[in-house]
Length: 346
Image (cartoon, rainbow, N blue to C red):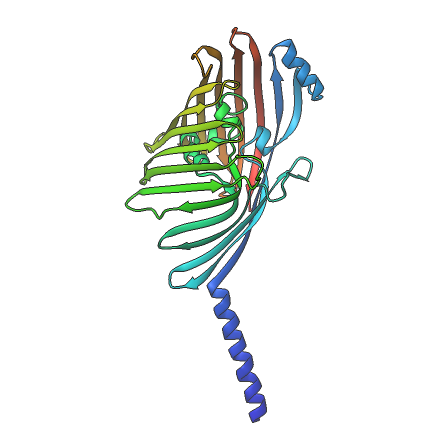
């Protein structure tokens, strides 16, 4: 072997070693989920409500294909996430997640609706910038975790909880801090400036909780100045082995126009091998902010079953019944959803 050949071989080997080392220090993962179901949705509400459905080109009873977020377990998505080891216990990470309607192939707006964030992580916890779920939403999810798989079938969804349907589950332009878990305790803080000098519409949220293997309790608070709403949730879950339960107590403090809400939800899941059976109930009551007079109430009941065909593919069926009444006791919504579907993760 000539000296020249040896030198080029050494250079190539060194380059390969450097590339291998760089690859070991960072990683990028592409992931996703496709969720589709077929079923029907029926509303026997008031005439005004029926007219609204007609305007949406939906009859009293409609058979259709649902994309996951409307009548399934979860919204279809794809995304990329990555982590780079910066050394000294410090890491940088990113996450970009698109949400799309699998029944039409249409992307939801904004394009990275699920998340678009950049993080710095270490022994101090995690500092995250960009768009992502709020820490209030994290706390609320604890209380929904066993209510028909925290899905579109969940009893509190689709009008039962105003704090479930009206609160912002994600903030744009968000600065977040997540503490490390210390002896089971954790906390998080969000702040999102409105970036508009003509108004005051900042948003912020806070969570604190305690988690061990079998149970978790969390407190969350979120304030949205643009809506003049303040949300509070106390949530818990417990795994008894043969049965898993979750529950939450929610409070929305509004203004003279939209009133206040008092809400609660309960959920139970029974795992049996590849099967999981779940049920949930939710109730909300809206009151006038000034005098406490009742402005309306809502109830939701849900049932669901899931079968694991594999670790990544699940078949399911669900039923949800939602009733909403105004302050005169007249139904403004009386909706029932039935659907069977399949979800695949990759």
